[in-house]
Image (cartoon, rainbow, N blue to C red; front, side, top):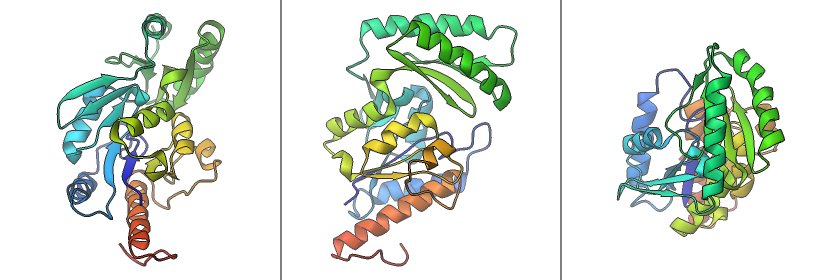
Length: 258
């Protein structure tokens, strides 16, 4: 049985810089509520590169009871207790290096339309709605990290560039989540759309990508939904529900409908 369904936010549950699909919010919140009493419905969680307050707000909207991951898996928030935890691998030396990169990034973007992504402790990043500007800036960041910080790695999404420790990627975050919740990785599903998600997609038993995912994600050969963004997320979740129903009744083919 698939016990936990984990979704990325940007590129999956939402389209960056566009209004959220409020109808989909209600649908997911309903699934989340029902998952506490209906065993065929996997519970929900989140794993996002966004900062803690943003992911906390999303967890509140959905009413999630399982812990959620923020800053790419380096931070964990428990809505039921209000507790924040930091990944055990994020030690003082990494913190100092991230602070150095944060200062460097803030200087490197002066005079451009790129904005610094404030509010993060374990990452350094910038954001911009201009994809071309970010695409031009990413090689500069990547080269700086490769030359000076062997324990860090740079990732690019359509609207952000992020520098994170190699020890606290989303893949590491999901392993940590498994340890905290007691849910084995092979009983987890994850949907992600960008390069930062690749390690996490390789780690779980049931990986998915929305139709809008980057080609590097689709190249993994994992199931790709016909729908984009939140439509794709719901499509993947409904597949997981069908899988659980199949297993519940000892079937070897997926039932029709959910």
